[in-house]
Image (cartoon, rainbow, N blue to C red; front, side, top):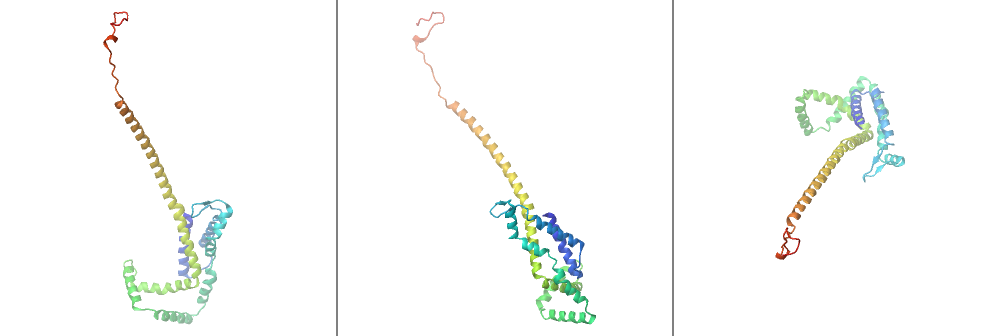
Length: 247
């Protein structure tokens, strides 16, 4: 689970680089990540699962049925290389345009964006520019970055809406599984160990208190035991020198 989350974050960064560079060809690292995600899908068919009621599924058929009816569709659709089908042909078409065509479509996109701009958008841009200036990115540079990269991300999201939604769900599921199997399990294990130690201490304290209470009861019994006083009559006293005949 830890490696899967790590590879998913690295794969997301690789996708960011592909969108920025407009290159969606074969990549060794992306292929490795896809192979790893495929192994994760296969392992989900043989991994024990715990239901919401606390029941642990160990039967192979129950595990397969559980996975096929829950996250299998999301994992399978997220694994497909949809970029080569929906995004790469559009980029190839744009790269084949002449200089005049590129200038025309770029100017038309700028005009389309300016129609939706309002005063609040300029105020938001000014507030963002104040914060980015502290990190070495001024307002003019920020504007150039937005003009350069925003259309690429907009084009990608517009043509990959469903795929992006499935991949976001898959990422959430991986983080959720990582939290449940690693972090939450460690916390529950620590709580169980603490609870067992507490029960042992309570049992020892109960035994000690019972011993103390038993000793105190014995002492109170000795203290409360009645004293017997023997009174002899005069005729019952005998002299040691006589032969036992009473006086």
